[in-house]
Image (tube, rainbow, N blue to C red; front, side, top):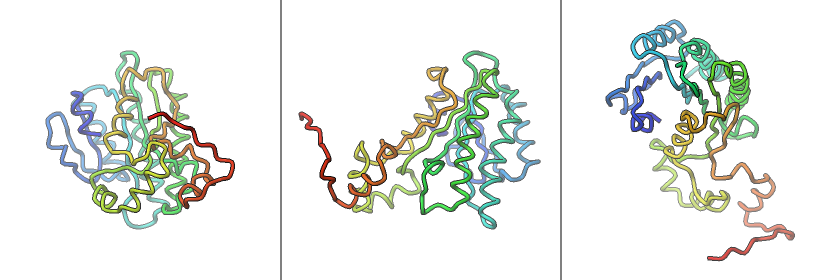
Length: 241
């Protein structure tokens, strides 16, 4: 996401526990802060506005990865921090039309069950989806658009090697995903960038699934497909090469 915005010439502030390598680029500044440290977070937000002026976009990609109570941690990192930042900066968006944009990275676990994720993850993602809708309505008069992006399984730097070396898993994604492959981090970032662009100036309150069409499939059909079973009434369109 930082690389994508940097290529577009944005001035970027990154708030997070870890320092990404992109933070060494020009026009990118890193604030190494635990999002649960409310006082430090508030200080950083004031510094960003003082230094760079009014903001154009906010993008939220965080989730809880610490130790301790996973339920409390997920709610604080995913929900409370998001609310705190939005409400602290809502009045600091630029006044130019079509206004600013807020994008929250969500998940299809907001309305489906991913058994590999805990209940806290599901509850937080569902709440973020509704939070985006709430702020889309309440911040709309300020010209601020608020949307969600829900990625599917994605090839990203920290997981790329695992997926590329797992041939059966690659075969499964080709089989069950309508577009026949996994997505990439760059493709997710491009959709987020679009929602931060004036080209999407009349889009707000939406949750856009970026998963190659996987979430369109009925669970029973998906299970049959993965198991190599065919429904007797299945019709297969004949496509010309």
